[in-house]
Image 1 (cartoon, rainbow, N blue to C red):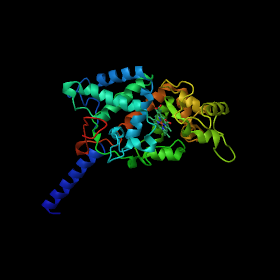
Image 2: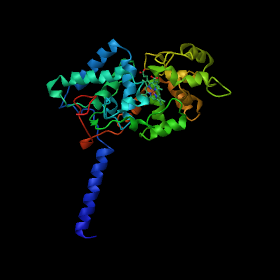
Image 3: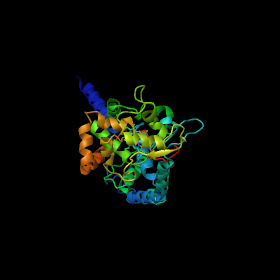
Image 4: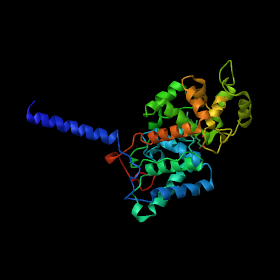
Length: 330
Ligand code: HEM
């Protein structure tokens, strides 16, 4: 190889490595805003605490919003973009219509509070504010605290079509769940830990009515459901229920972030097939049993998993920007 060819080869290699490192291994770091907006964590926490005092839904609403953001085009706040006459955004895909408005409102309010500080104005991404608010709601519910990695940019596109196939369905079995999470760099253990988020929040009746009324020709009620729990679900969600009715997903400690979710699964009280299968499938059962009895082990696995979730598809450089209004592209 001539010297100039060698030079071109090396240049190509270093450009490829640069692009690769920029897109795949975007470097997030905990102190990203230390010199830009040193008080950002306190500002976001203050807004979250105030919002939680107004309504508890802030907690599950924000946590679920982060998950739905990260699994569609990465953690880039694309889920917060509002639809316009020319574009139906992610949030209007059927899979996102049940996202609670209070999750969106939390980010909008925290962004306003951050931007009210002159040195912070237009310096902190909506994606990072959502990541911080998510940690704060977990803590508010009694969950583990953890360091949030920062430095995400906000995404430049948000379409309803891009959501299709990217989010798990409540009817999924273990293989479907594992493979969807694997596409986002998350292991089966991460998936089981993140499912523990269903220790909080609400579900509309239509998300699980198949399990209590028409599971199969032989078994109208899913045989893996606890019999007493199935009757309670039928009472809370009669066949002609108002579609706006939502019930607690953790029937035991609905407002606390704890490992009772896994104890519920042991008793057949997982609300969705995708919850209960974590116990009925013998490949995931040992982890469910471990975390049902060992809260510290669950908390530590959750922190690992949500930190990895926060790294999914992070935008840097020209792939993103810092939105002035989280719901509108600049
Ligand atoms: C493993 C696959 C998952 C499936 C199939 C699933 C599905 C669902 C469904 C169907 C609902 C009820 C929505 C409604 O009717 O309003 C729900 C609620 C919720 N999900 Fe998941 N989810 C999964 C994983 C996760 C993960 C990884 C997180 C967060 C880390 C999460 C957080 C939540 C929260 C907090 C709620 C309650 C929302 C509220 O009360 O507003 N879920 N999920």
